[in-house]
Length: 434
Image (cartoon, rainbow, N blue to C red; front, side, top):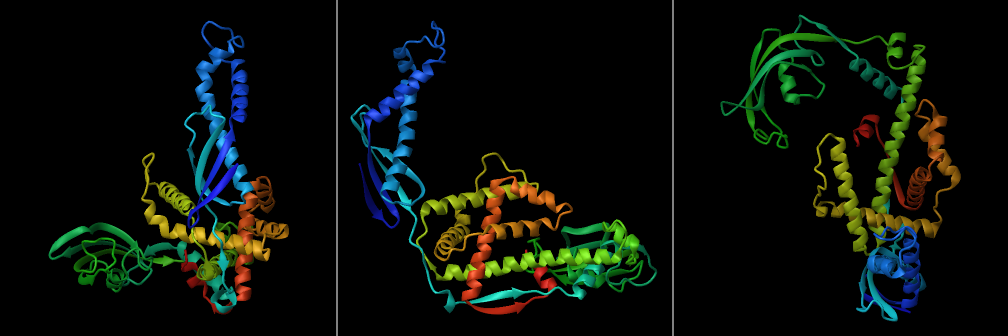
């Protein structure tokens, strides 16, 4: 027997009773099974009297059976009452005498909310469009040449992209500030290692020159002592080296992994890699834009249990990321989950909205879509067939790809129904996105 109470919002209480004979039979069965192997002083294994087994293990087995029975009974009662449970229930045993004919308990929990998705056709969404050009490929080749530059001594004045060796001293109110002084410091100008105003002041200097200049640090500079403040730098230039770029020839191609040195093949590989990365970023941008539309038109109450669970997941993920970057994380360290509440709310809402759309509009991932996406991933590896086999060998990996395809289907549904404005972006703008 069971009954359901609505406590307000998504919270429910299920009142259920379990017949004692069901518990007693399971407890007795487990104690008999335990008696076959239990070691009790003075008795051979399998010869211990049932009463002694019951005295030593009865309470423990009773708690185990009761806990499992509560879970099983709750699942059956929830299904019987057509309740979609969100999160884990809190059990309360109402019967004080566990040997009573009926064990009565209540379970308090939340249910999944009703999800109402408004009309997408009244919403506007920006769709990112990108077309890879020959200039993009050539610019990438130029960047690769710069990365492999060899620096040679120069007798002229400093130019941008030169490598220089300097001494510098920065003073705030006449006192050298922390991190503001260095000897024999080597830097390539234009590599964004130093602030632009600092590098600009060095351009035009010659070996042996000493130059003093004022500079104002950005307001958001990481060094709080000098952020937004004007300081005075003194720079001494010791050497200038000009970059010599490698020729785009067979040796250059071989240095980038093209075994036969074919420059055309190198450029084809660069084009393919750029295209894959650009399209990945386009997909991410368009997905974000589509999801913002869904958050706007989706109406639902977020279950607290799901919100708390997602905030906990985000917190643990953040700790793993910090650990992956080399930070030592004390065992058992926790971060305030409040800091993740906004992101968690957004993710839970989107998850529920997507589930509703997939069910309502049959946007499930199709086998051929999953196969095509895996093949797309595999193309960026040296042995694509091994990547395909790796995905096929594990159901959880396939589910991850299915979820990505499902999201793609939802994005396509939004783009097909909303008022779409195309925005053509350049490669450098696309690559600036994280």
